[in-house]
Length: 106
Image (cartoon, rainbow, N blue to C red; front, side, top):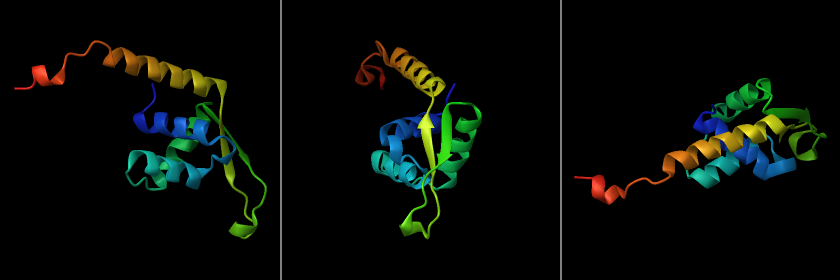
């Protein structure tokens, strides 16, 4: 099972494709959720997801704007796609046939 943060990070990596690196993932998540994502809340799950085999990482080419430093780029693996599909199925099943919340609130 994925945590919600792990699921969102995997989705961000998938969305960003070749531009999926720590800072771009953080920016994307902040833009979509409307919440601040401290960098540690991105890098810690990225490391964990890489160790689990759901992501693969590689060093990109050095960039002029970063003083020649390379970015660590992330890519979704087949296992990562399967984990996202499972998470989506579980979420869909939980939402299916829910009663109208207005009827159950008193």
